[in-house]
Image (cartoon, rainbow over all chains, first blue to last red; front, side):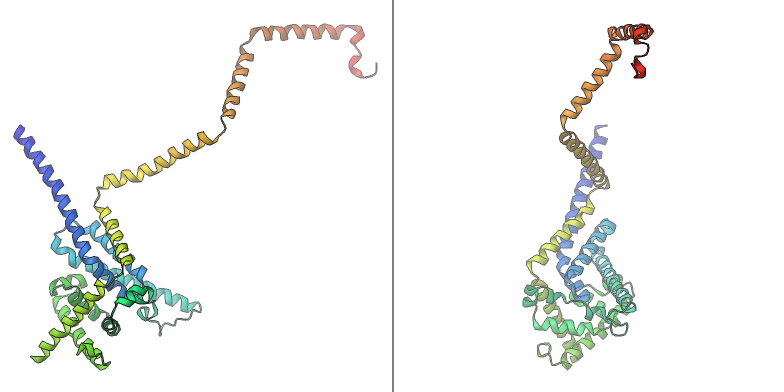
Length: 202
Length: 125
């Protein structure tokens, strides 16, 4: 009887310790990715506050829905959530622009580019603007020219360091597609930066 | 082959540039990200404790409202009500007053029968 109680208490203690470990693990994971995730969101949305909200929402959704999953799965799942939130925000802006255009707003459907039209993250914050170098600004300009899937593949593979399989999970596509998008993105970026005389990329 | 080598160098350069831009984030943004992380970690709390906190908040608000009500309403009003209630009870329970009312009725009946007071109510006399 005592042995059974002892085993039960030990099991409960291990569960509590496991939960604590899991909490510490996911906190460490969020701490590791938060700044990079924000930077990616800001590059896509071009609005500091909106980017912060998107990152917070992605964190909450990850913890709420996937904290029980193995920690190896967190990274691709988190970036999938982030990617979807960014896409939703861009669609919302497009719809808003169309409504404005319908009611006589200034933005027309053909001219509207949600990325180009939105206020720039770097322009919002003088300190951030001062610390971001010319090279990053040139890279951001070039990234804006890429198709969405190529931009996603490049950011996830190159900036975030996801491998091909993780990027495929994050982008909800095959590994072959990831390789294709990434390869094309790298070639186009290099060509664009060289074409615009960005010497630091030579 | 040389292309592959250049591509690797290019990729390293883009990653380095991005890492530097992340390292250059301002303190306000980092602080806001820390808050966002703590907010997300709130989701790890057991559902029961979060539900309890959701029920405790309205209960606390109700208790606070009641407390404010009883402290703001003037105490004299309550005393007046109590005194009025006590007076009514005293009247209802006082037997001598009812007896006196009986005697008065008899007196008013006798008075009406007296001839010198018979036409007093018509306003002529």
